[in-house]
Amino acid sequence: MADDAEFAQMDDDWLDITALVREGARSLGSGEMIKPDSLSLLDAMTSVQVMDPRLDMGMLTTADLAEIALWDIDRPLTLSDTLWVANRLFCCEMTWHNSASLLQTIYTCNYYTDNLPTTIGSPTTGNRERDLVLYPLVVATGLCCRRVWDEYLRENVYSEEDVMLGSTVVKFFDDRFSLPDALGLLDVAQAYLETQEGVEADMLAAHVSMRRRWLRVLSSLFAEYLSEDPSALDRSMDELEALRQEHNAYRSTYSDHIGCAGAGVPGVFDAKCMRKFPSLAPIKPRDLLALGEAHAAMASL
View 1: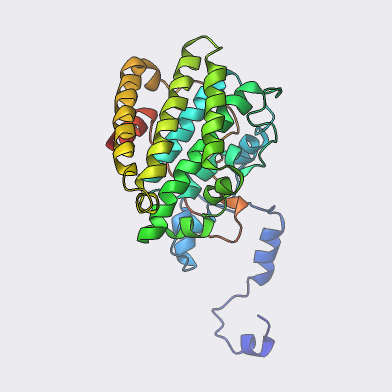
View 2: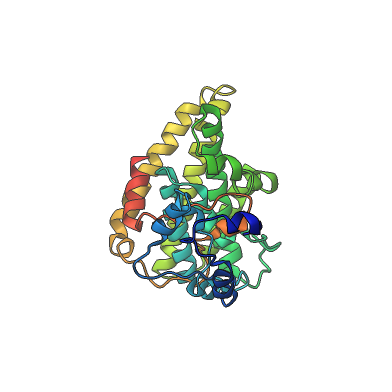
């Protein structure tokens, strides 16, 4: 109570607890809060007329901090690691297509939001699976998202978060990698995987081939391109049919592997990536589609 005179005029039933609250809060560290079992986060936020508890989703727990500490962009990847990341990224992309935000999907991958290395596609790289396989898929996925993003903007169909964040990832790739650049990187990945043996190499090679087809479809299908070359529609439909056949064969051949998530790579995906965008209200993390569900979503597309 700043005004002692006003406080003195209050009813005797009122008790000044300012000092008590300050003393209680003094022992709390940054990011900590007092939470009894009888009071949920929703109850607490509602009591102060903050009707959306998602606003507190930026708070990092001890488990969050431990997971963040595991991220290492220079970690050497195996083919198995690379396949796991590629599958998880594919789940992000398909979840985005199913009405999720970029913050809940694509942006959770640290290979997007961290600085890109200069060794992408370089035969002299010391991290071959990362630079010759994973990053070509990351770049090509970014360009696919950009093609869809263009149509979102054209038709005014987008979410508030995606409007504000659109330049961070999707547009970034068009600035550094053109369509020929991305297709060239996929060629590098295909050539490298042809020298490797094992089911992981075969599945990654299929990823690369399907990504190439999907990028070609999206690059010739939308209105901007069709207005300049109407015949692109026929070529795109032929490419799309080839993609359908290849994707169906992939799902049939590797059905056992699609149903098994496999061991993950720690720190690669950050569900609370919203802290990297402090000017935005945090959005609640969303569960991604399972790998089988993501392939079903792709088939429906």
